[in-house]
Image 1 (cartoon, rainbow, N blue to C red):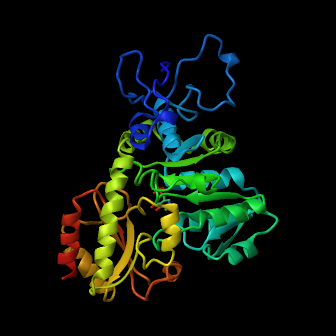
Image 2 (cartoon, helix red, strand yellow):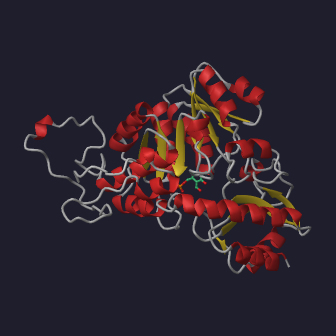
Image 3 (cartoon, helix red, strand yellow):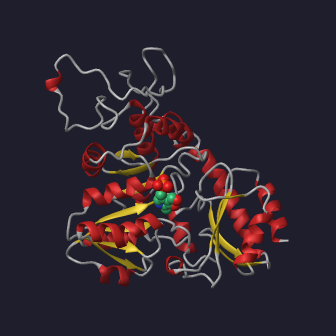
Length: 395
Ligand SMILES: Cc1ncc(COP(=O)(O)O)c(C=O)c1O
């Protein structure tokens, strides 16, 4: 695959970038889309001893690189405004790749108290138990709490841009300021806020992690993760977590997600608009006990959200109708269009019910009331149909 990319994505606007960046036409057949390459090896040059195996992104072996991985990484980097991207087998593998590369025994992480469960488990159990790495969980909205948690051995500050599932918004410039003053990296999981909704690097983040399983793929049919940032930070991640630890994305998933990402800006425009309308509908409805959506004036961090996401706050809404766990299950069972399932960012709207019943759910307590949380991922269906579905199920 030697033909150069004719389109320089640096000069293109976001939808054109999403369509064209990373697409490597096939010079042997003339196919205008990067074909799916399942061969796991690429032919050596005449003198294979001349190969520098420490250089990533060479077409040698799929665990090092492949045409589909390269195309996907180029598209993701262009969309995120990052110098480089590394694609992994899942979002969790991408988060792990950052920890694996940048943390050594004795190091410390300051982490927002509301993060995805696997991140929480890595930082509270697996990394401390196996490698002697420690983490302090803080209210990441409170600069004094973040500052007080920093130690000389703190290497990373970690937060979700909009937290799963509480929709807590990370104050990226504030967190970056504190992290950098202590020579630490700010790493954010931006799964809830894909580009062009939010580009965390523009607000001071050093590394951006995505579960590309979600919005970036957008069709609920692939699994992948990505880490994006400066090439000097991404190269060691590729060498250690991809080449040496093997968390690489499979060519088929890379192909599928690259195809899905071509419509990301288009889909996010619809998602931003539909989610705002649905959040406003829920907020105004007396049958609903509470709603959290960063785009609503009632969200405690609405001003910050509006600054970080001026064109819309993505599609994740947390809410609950009045009633107990049984009432919430009954509400979900009455939905006809919105599907009850985990995951998010799909073409179809999804709803997930988290009951507040055990110690894990206690982390979700603030700022919610004492019953469960419904996490709604607004899809790209007609918003009038989604509103009608919610209205009918509220009874
Ligand atoms: C915020 C966030 N980060 C990471 C992940 C993990 O992604 P994956 O399922 O692709 O490993 C998820 C999955 O739901 C998530 O919501």
